[in-house]
Image: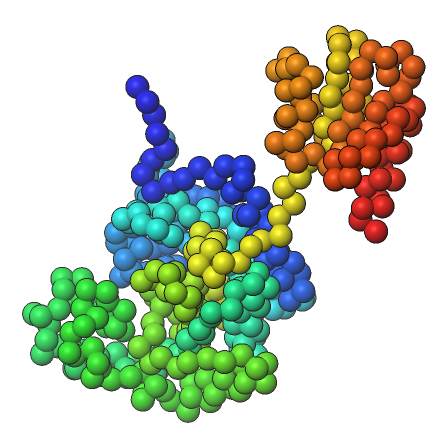
Length: 427
């Protein structure tokens, strides 16, 4: 029987995983500059966390969660997104009581959603996200958006579009909710089954429906921007003014809604406009979620964040033809000739590795010619040759592969010699 990985999962092999490592290192450095600290949360949580934090009316909770019962009869769920877990950690560990606020976190990690696998959308996928908790200042909304844009630009993406909207506060949303129900109710029977339920539970999410997006009622639906009260309108104007000061262009889309129940005020998505990226252009999305901390049992605390799929980020880089500056060459390869030289080579390899030098050798009993071929395939910068004659004389031969220059040095000096060689390369 041949076993394969579950549908919607993937193996990331050497040759590809280096791209992930590079991207993650760049994103981590951007977060460092913005003073966001990494947080790591469990891969599974109590199901109630997502029911309360993400929302019972969302497709994620109703259709896409991987939920199971453990041996103690507790309902647990593989996390479908990162925000609820980060907020739960913030509350459980009483981070809101620390003097330095707002709390600014970033995270990486696998998420799990049961949906039809397609390019860039897997059942297990990796998200990078940030959360800023404890500030009602519209400037931090702009900061979060700037960090998202900066992250993509730092990696070389240029064909980006920032789409912005305000979902308003609770009062504004309630007025808009009434207007949406009044508008869509005459067309109720023409809407899909999901939207018929949404119309009663969360009518704003009707605007986000993929099945009914071409229904004539969508284009004439009342805009949330028409129902913003003075506070919400001023808040949104301030967010836009900060983005203007930063020189970050944006497009207002009054129909932009986020798929999770906890969003209010600022909502945004970043899209790829690169040709060949695909029909689904969204790279990332986020927004403000005042009320989520209280829903999970903490004090009244506002928050804002976003999340991006690493898979879709890599797709966008490929679509724009961005080549990542990956170092694929091996530092050193040791060719050993003879049984005693093999043993001595093992000690040299160990000492070089302790000195911080990347080195490898043959472990398959290959002949000398085949060992040199292995060094070529690994693109070794240096090949060190240790044969019986070199061993007898306490020497080792060093070959610089880029120039073909060779030099014989004392075996006892090889570690210091190679350290100086690589120091010279880096200077």
